[in-house]
Image 1 (cartoon, rainbow, N blue to C red):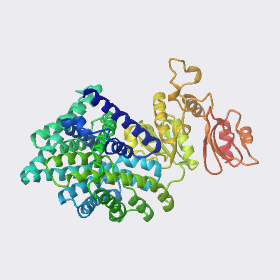
Image 2: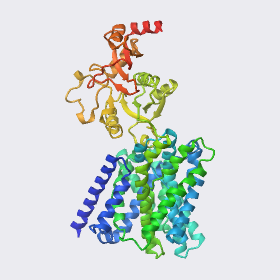
Image 3: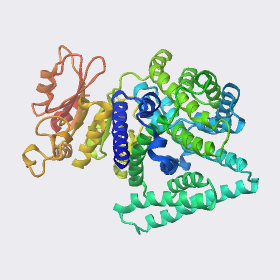
Image 4: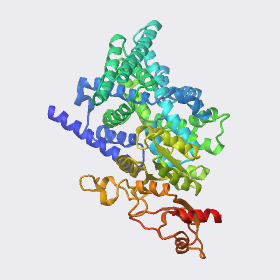
Length: 602
């Protein structure tokens, strides 16, 4: 039995990894492949039987995993950002979410025959999208900035709020089912909120005063979450999920608490938990489904896609600046994700144990809605965006990592050439100067989890890593290879080839093509700027081609970029030499005397 359990768990982890990898390759939400893998392993083939495999451990394992997933999702809600997210998003995550909950509950009641308590719980679980399903879809969809911002912020904000809705409704159902009074229900809420807030405060004090060493902070946070969950459940039955949700929201909004590393760890842990949990939960589905359940699920999916979502978007976007085309695309895109799948399975387990009629239908209906929305919207959203003319063209923009004078002058030159440029760095002084130069900026490390959630990459297709930190440049290049492709990522050397000994050299897998010529380093570029060299942008023609440009500005001129007639940016690199042609616009670094002559001539 031990060998069988260990082997099955190992296989489950391996299959979860393959599903996550496949999702990354095809740029689709991983939840789709995880659910399909679980269905194949469970009801289709019978290879995985979670109830037999884990026995009495099944419910505790699922409960603790869901608690950690809800905590990680709740950490991302920033209350101070809510006033700035726009009228449309505020509508979608407030009265829009409540309207969606009620409409989906009505669909569950009248179409699938769910009792109203279960139907309301179904509505709360399925009214939410989430960043884990929206982010990969946006990479493929590439909509306009307004649409991308609206969908991304809706997913970020509604994910923890939807979990809170679902937990509250679940608490009410359990209290009623067990014959508890309203006083007992309120007691459950008080314990959940009180323990969650108290646990967040205690953990924040320990982190602020550095009473927990850095290498133990992630471990300590995980323990604190599980202690809060278990203690709350012990003191007041079924209040643990509310406690961890409140704990995450409270900790994420406390000032002076550094949680970036905790978020990184929780994200990695959540990936592991989600990968295993969804395979496990999907494998518990019974096939064939109860009579009429498949068709009821398909009917609810069509109602959610074709009626509920468009109505909600129409209501939420009243008075917003979104055009009807943008609203139409937003009305089509609303994939369901992690909260719906994980929490519905946990609730179904508990409600089934209580003998509540209809609880067994909760998971199949939720999973049908998840698979339907992800598959349909992934296949049709991009063609619809193109038809509506709200899709971004091919990503021509540039992400510049760095904010010193070198990065700023490069970013300014590209912006002046008509490219969308975002300059990102965690040096506040440099970012402030870039903003004064009129550049669009992002304050933070572009390879961080915070950047994945908040850095707007719509229309961006290249990375120029130009910070003064060699190792961070390399990490950013590795990170953005997945996003842009290996051939769209470049770095400015921090050391010359002669200075890079075997002891200091980074492995080739961490390196991207070096920018500009063989001798150019960050220090040399900064030195040339200090000596008076300037960046010059000129359109070439048949009568004034690249050799004429070199003749006028000198053979020391350093070619930086070329812009083709159709607007394609070409980057000069030591590995890929450019040959500018008539009709191109060249951006080059020219010596000081020639720069002065050119400015006087202008």
